[in-house]
Image (cartoon, rainbow, N blue to C red; front, side, top):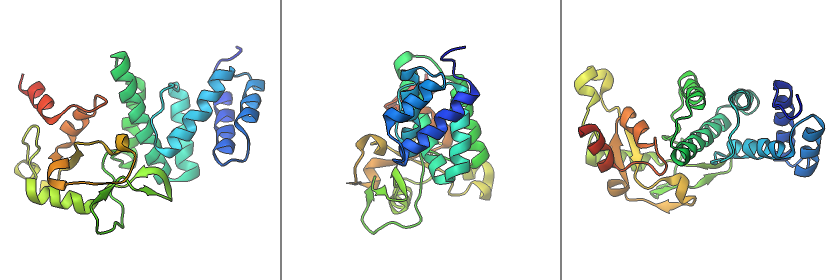
Length: 239
């Protein structure tokens, strides 16, 4: 069927997207190649643009179907490794949050793909700790090796937890109380000002800009874009 996005056309789109991303082929020529393969012109452009945004960890607003999303993630991991897959998962999560907030509906199939990749690869798309950071408490500095992937500063995390402790600021759970030594010092840290939206390096106050949250509450805070506030989520769970 003409213009239908088949697996063969998804494969072709992925290969053409790589060529455009690495500036080995122009967008117009790649689009023409995909049109000749049976894709609609607009769909071809969307597939190429979405690949670029996934590689760069940027939100995209045009939706890939489940087969395309699965194929792109599988092959980004195979071809470029875990750093780029982490970018792609972040882009997908931003896309899902954007779409669900706009359409007031849940993207069940894409969320299932996202969660399966997170679990199988031990990824947490909101908490990223680079191995090396400078002494300044700066966040959001772009790393050359991971284009547009914003650094998370572990020194700031440490200072936040030393001040606020390890109780979730939403539901007040403490993992050591439940799991004993296994849960000691386990907690996520939530950025009250989202780095991905600031899109530049900035100096943070670890005591005011960061807060500890458990993984469940962290996920729920990000069910909306922009995220729920701590107070909003407390009201939800206490209703």
